[in-house]
Figure (spheres, rainbow, N blue to C red):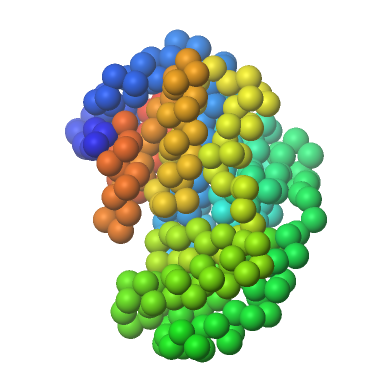
Length: 288
């Protein structure tokens, strides 16, 4: 398990030294050659606090200033999210921010891309299975018990079923997992579990694939990736693969009591989005 963030009376933020040698090596590489470093981050739970209604999620108030402070010192900043790219840009407040001209948002696990330089989203045609799943979903939910408080989020290229508002969120999550997996499989989709959410989406796209492709595109020589949920595990695996290829990588978990799988694999654990912001500012202070 990675180093847990600690607080001190120092006036400015600092970076606790990562415990695993690979994490320390990656942090040293980022400090030594910042102009070849990529900082990539999840959105919900990492840059934005988790809220009951995802439509209400907004970036931590200090997140964009911290990113704008750091971005000019490194090769690139990327937000890698399961949300539609345009929604992440809107909820994050990323558009038109001085200092973030080289920000890229990889939405829908990399199926969509927004670049700050152009302000446009590029994406392939939606998978036809998403429309079929959307049409059948009400009947499947009713047959599975029609759990009170469960609700559906339309994500354009995916459909997500949330159980956080149910009387027993975990029981609803477990009861729906198999029928939703079967529904997804019938239409060529997969189920991605998260924090009290089951997302039905096309296969072959995940944060790991998106991250690896972007690293290769920009020629990054070191990487920091921060995430908080099960959907970030492929990105963690991608960073571990990059390490095996000689590219240093630092794994950061935005701490959560709901998901421990990331903190168990992380080099550094910080205290949610506020901790991520402190980390970004501390890194910028050291590089500037």
